[in-house]
Image 1 (spheres, one colour):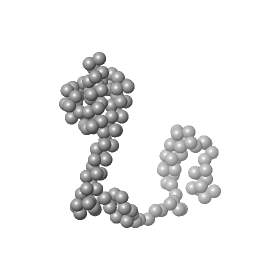
Image 2: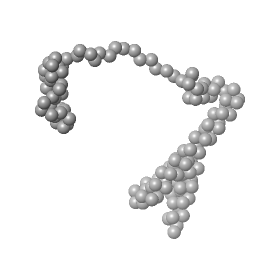
Image 3: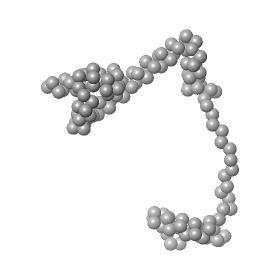
Image 4: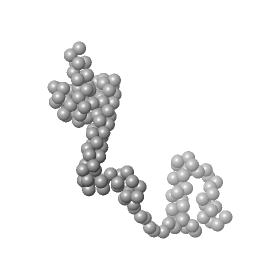
Length: 138
């Protein structure tokens, strides 16, 4: 019975602070005990994972609240962070340039044989193959 009470207390602590070390300290158990309980008891492990998820959502809400407060206080870093992550016009953009060559490429006979063997081994190609015909101009 004491063990179940300890588990319940630990799960409640994890929901408030989703950091295992801190939650264990507050519940008065060791991290090793927590991980042993998870290993031995699938139901407890699932409850712990749910508690961690719940706790993470709580921390996210608190962080977002603090970020909004910082924006209200005209904190330029907070403003920039918000815009980069919530406004499409301010998101970082990556530009790629280059050339893709796909047309009229021919395989060397060695590469062609290697590709055919690989396809056969994978069960994706039968003995009569279109790859040979295509590369031979047929």
